[in-house]
Amino acid sequence: MNQKISTDQTLENISKILEILTETPKKLEALSKGLSKEQLREPLGKGERSLTENLTHLINGEARSSEMIYQALLSHEPLFADVHPDRDWGKLTRFDLLDFSDLLNYFKIRRKILLRVLSGLKEAEWSRAIREEGKKRKESVYWRARTIAMHELEHVGDLEKKIGTIKNN
Image (cartoon, rainbow, N blue to C red; front, side, top):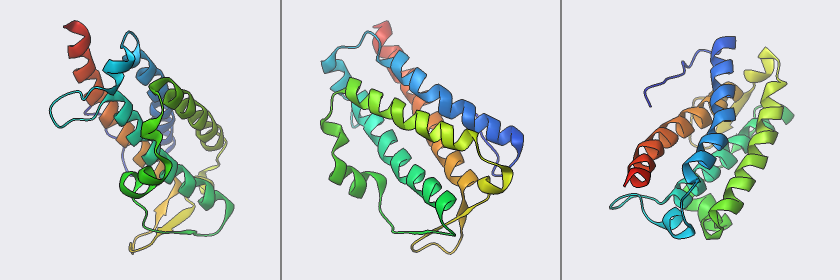
């Protein structure tokens, strides 16, 4: 998808982020409709992830970023270890072993919680700082929420193209 969200923290950009975060679970559910359990686990192309692996990837990334957001809202400039969402977090949690329907339900619950937290934030809370090990630059709650939204927007757009092709064949 070519939709972009500016790095500038504005009410309009926050609204775009919340809209994308709201729509992602619905789009993933629609994409999975009519696909068998086998199709949900089949790679979408040579060297590509399956829909289940894509959802696992989105959950891993969202989990790390949401954790940062929650901690930034609870403490002053928390420091996060350099833990890669897939290579480290994913190997520990092994969401990839779950069925797609279980993963989607888990994703929907996580998303409800994240949206409830983000929807209630005041402007100053969106600016709360997050520090990551090995990075000089601090990020904000806004930046992490934007990161989740942009990441999901990119993957869902790609999935819509690939799964549309599968469903049309």
